Image (cartoon, rainbow, N blue to C red; front, side):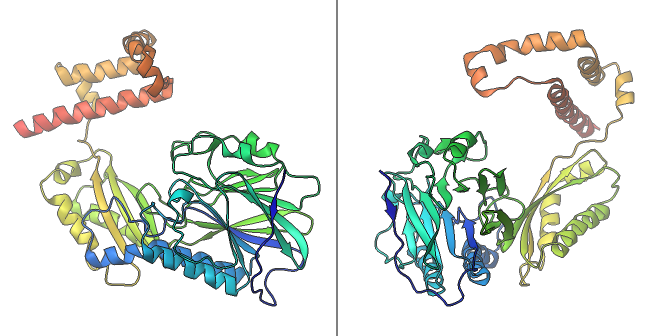
Length: 443
């Protein structure tokens, strides 16, 4: 039996919403009060500014709701970062919801693995515009606009943290007389290595319910999983928090025409953005050239940041004479200090979080191939594995027990020819660098 929960009455502004259309904002994974991780050598003042970043992103979403005069806001799970949410985070969250109540904007929330219902605080009073989804079954809430049924929002929360079953199976199929229908859920669609597969389901599972839009959470990278029939979107988290969350972060503004056509816009909400830049040392002869190259990257980030601050990790790659300098004790620390100098004083900062050295000694392989020693034998073996089919097959035979074992099949996929060449070359790089380092030390 389908149970439709009517919305609570709330104050509605005279011009809220758009006549003849439906508009909403889809956000997820706020992770309020979440610490930035993976940052080394952080300055105390910078640490204070970063601590505010998740709240600033949330406030940007609230302001966007009011600027766009949307009908409602959807939050697809993980409002907080953990069950140990601070009172400060809870109060700030409620404050934003009350702003929306005053503007006549409804809010629909489902809970995920970081904020399951059994850990949810009941000590604070919810504004009348907020609708929390149940954890025992899918809840269907009717949204009326100008007295007419405009949408059904169907959602379900995590009752506990670790949900490994398909919650979509608990959702009702869209009825023939239903208006625009939205599914609200924190889940994993298909296979992904980005996050644990909580509430796993397939795109076909979603399609079978015949909904118009699926507002999902859990995957932090913004993505449109399906463009139509139905539209399926992960907005990602509104603020990146570590080097694995680079690029723009935000939410989606969704407009639905009177005819049911759906248009979406991704809006950036992050106040601090993560970048990882790879720099090749090939062709660089002096330390000054490297510094200029790094500074040029920082200038590029600053010019194209839209005024927001950034945290950058540099990864130095390639072969070149600067490899010796980069290996000198204290050089990278001095370089890092130079690039960080004066960065936290301004409103906009570009903080170099780390410099990783993955460079190698310069190598002339033609000369190494002529050597009658272990290094010469090594490059000859590598060339043979790349070009000689018989040698390649013999090498695969040596590796076959690894892929044939029970544990191996669980964790290691078969390697195709392109990946095999890449792995062989990587192995050569490691071995040659170790041998050349030893040779360089002896000289």
